[in-house]
Length: 358
Image 1 (cartoon, rainbow, N blue to C red):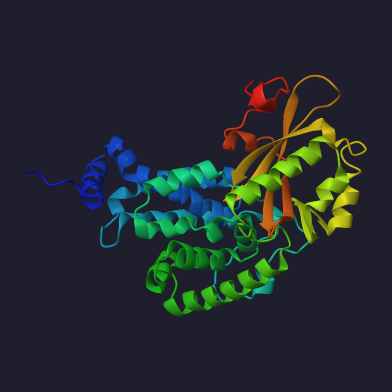
Image 2 (cartoon, helix red, strand yellow):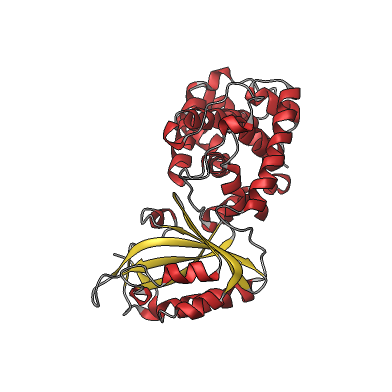
């Protein structure tokens, strides 16, 4: 009786065939790893578009250099090494974001951190992609999609780390590689890796506590969260600012990356909602519940005037604390709807007020 092939056996066969120039074998070799590499690139870079680009560049470099791969270490680790270095190169080129390309892990934090008033380019990550990833991962590797490591508060805080500290933290604490393995990936010493990791952990804790972009999500339970989102949607459609404010924590936070504006507290958020857009016409929106980064979210469609379709406008990611909303992060980028598989228009006449495809 023929025994069932293990994942390692299949990888070995695909690798040998791919090295001989078979692109289909390379596709089969990398397919199980693509989604987790994409998530790693997203954590490193903060946006879906950049993660898409980094994944494609990683696969291209891996294909071109496949003959150099020696299976002393797993193929997965080799792919993570390529992806991390692709991301570091991309981060080094982002002079518009004020980030500094580090050549030494010992560089001071103050030399590499973005100023608080500089824009933070950040996207939410669709839960559908996370679900897809969980289904493909064996047990030990599933830790890369633990709730805390995919929440928006974590990803936002990571973006404030110097690039190579960021890489060390993600490879060590999220993906789970050893200090030796991370040092090899970053082409540095174990001592430098551990030093960078310690500084990164300290900074990450400070950034998460500061909550400059979003509060941590407390996960109060599916039913409670669904009810809170429902009440938010109803209040928004009724243009009832007071009812919306009543759903917030006392120190709730509203942010709109990449804009630096922050509205802290019920009063400030209520004042903002009462004045935009065009005099507080919140009833010109239609909000459709969705999920991102393992958090509740809404897709906002906006209609100019009293007739016609509602057009894709923004995604808002919510963080819940107890029985109230602790933060709302608005991403006013209609292109994100494509990543979430959402249509670009909504028609009130559609059954159940669900979005209708164009």
